[in-house]
Figure (cartoon, rainbow, N blue to C red):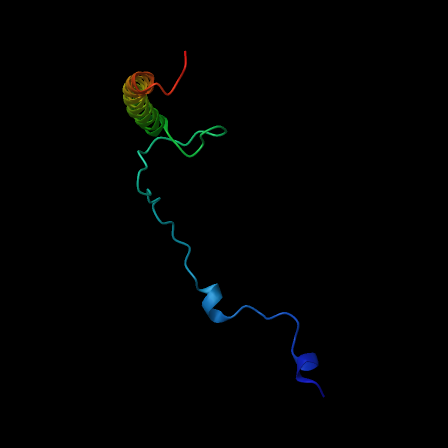
Length: 102
């Protein structure tokens, strides 16, 4: 006969499961938890301090990006001015050599 058919479908509880004690472990805080209860809904994983810190980091990053953009715009203006000066110089050279009839 097939051994799978002779085994009982449900096992009875053993001695070790009956004698198991039910103790309550204290709640352990994860890294970054500040102890306040967690809100539900939008930004549920972050408490007030973490949200404020994230907002300050975003403001700092935006300020740094703004400064970089301003520096790039200034450099672009300087490059355009230099290109205009080179264009004027080329026009003067071509006029002196008689390359253009104006």
